[in-house]
Every structure is written in C-alpha cells, then in structure tokens.
Figure (cartoon, rainbow, N blue to C red):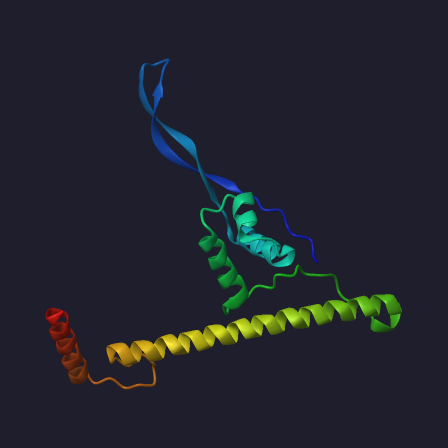
Length: 174
C-alpha cells in the first residue's frame, strides 16, 4: 500500500444577506456553506484511499463530507474504469537492479505483483461486465423502440420520418 496524499478540502462559500446588528440592517456577506469543493488531485486521492483501504463507501463519504455516495462512485468510474485511467498507486522511485535485491525483497515484490495482477484481473472482469451490460441495454433499446443505435447502421432520413410518425401514433393511442 502506498502513501495516500492529503486531501485539501475547501469549503464552498456563497453570498447571502445577513443581518448586521450594529448597523441595524441587512448586508451582503460571504458565508461558508456545509458543502466542499474538491479539485482533480483531491478526487484522485479520495478514490485511491477508498481503493486501497477497502473501507465502506459511507465511511469515505462521511470523512470527506461528500454529498452522496453516487458522487464517489462517479469519481471511481472516472479514475478507475474510463480511458482517462489514472494510476491509483503512487509513483515509486526507480526500481533497483534485480541482482542487488535480497531474496526477501524479491519475494515481497513477487507478492505485490501477484496482488496487482489479481486487482487488474478483477478490473478486467468488471469492465467485461460493463461492456456486456451496455451491449444488452443497446439490444433492448433497439428491440423495444425499433431504432438503430449502433454506429455501423445506416439510417435513411425517410425511414426516420416514418418511425417518428409511428412513435407519435403509438403515443397518441396510449
């Protein structure tokens, strides 16, 4: 496990009218809210912490005052599963020459590589499931709504007009 960088949470502020007792009137003032702002490095650090600690989502959401668990899942999706994939393991120093390592260090490195291999296999299985889910969702949408969704299907404008009329008639009948 790597060192998890510190997260610099900034509290959101908003301009509100606040009563000033000294002046006896309302004035506009910057007030801190109970919400926080996270930059990209904070989001990556939080995703890394969740991934490495394997703690419940609710614990991370509470610790960092994230509005909902869905927000954290969005970050995980963005930084773990998307093409913008960010390594969740911090950068390490240049590896020393294998011949200079002791047998214990080599065994430890092998253990770490096996754990990394297992994690990557799990990520691959998750990605395969996502791909299958998207394919199934597309197939169901094409079957139920009778519209081509996949890019390699050629749509003629007249065919689309006919389908639009059909949808309007179906909607009117319901």
